[in-house]
Length: 89
Image (cartoon, rainbow, N blue to C red; front, top):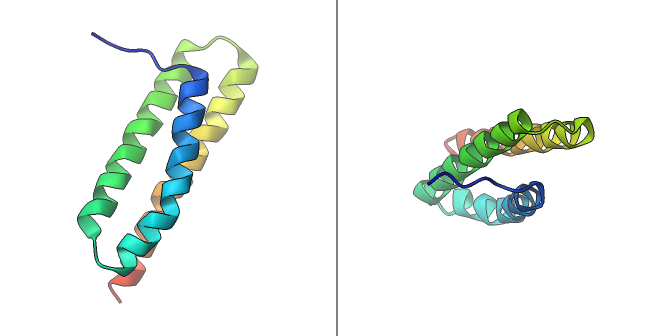
């Protein structure tokens, strides 16, 4: 069964992922790369769900908000990748 995500649910989910970013910084520092890889995988799934919601939504204001949410999630993904690369130096 396919479950639809609500706009509010996606918003709350994305906010929780931003809160986790601090923990991921510490995980990178401590070498827990498997944890960080799981975090990135979860962020990619969140981005996929946001993108699905954008496709299903006809409200232009919500689409704009979802696009911003999507861009923010990808900013998190790229930031975590940069931190992971920097930790290898």
